[in-house]
Image: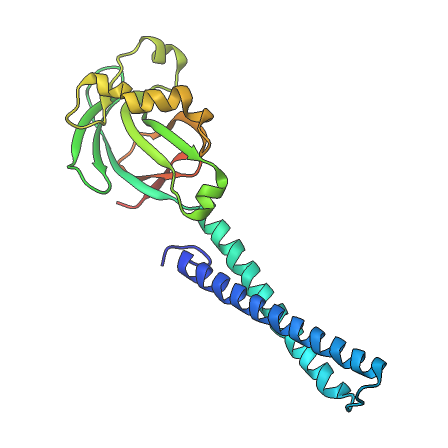
Length: 240
């Protein structure tokens, strides 16, 4: 189970059932209205005087309204569940394990094990600072594209250390490593991403393009999962 109230397949199924029931109920309601109007027209013209069938007509109307009500509820629940699922979806992108080192001078040093999700090998870094920070690029689509199933486009670019004290941040030794495997330094400014940063917000399908960073403490042995959502990166701590 993915932890959501109703998964995406359940939401789509409810939407299809609700839509189908609503269409069927609408057709039946139109047929009922047509037959009632035809009966009243015939009676007004006195071409025929069929039995009124009041009880049968009321029963049919109640059943049609009940079908429309149930279908409307299913359609609303399915739509709400799909919206909730799409806009709270979190895609795992990396795992990070931290292990503080000792006797490495005045600035803290942490061994970082970085594991990309979906391919790639583990990488190990020694990082200076009180915290570790992961950075990347984000393309946020228009909300209706998210609703239709298009996930946030992203790229992880850097992992670096971060100090809590502003003076240490300015003067203490820093560690910055690239997360773009087997690529020259110029790929940090890949032409595709440079184009998106410059013109992305002018494209009809793009909401915004921006750089994003998330950071966590590195003063204990911990295991973290990094996710990307509709608004950027987030970090969740896991048990070792």
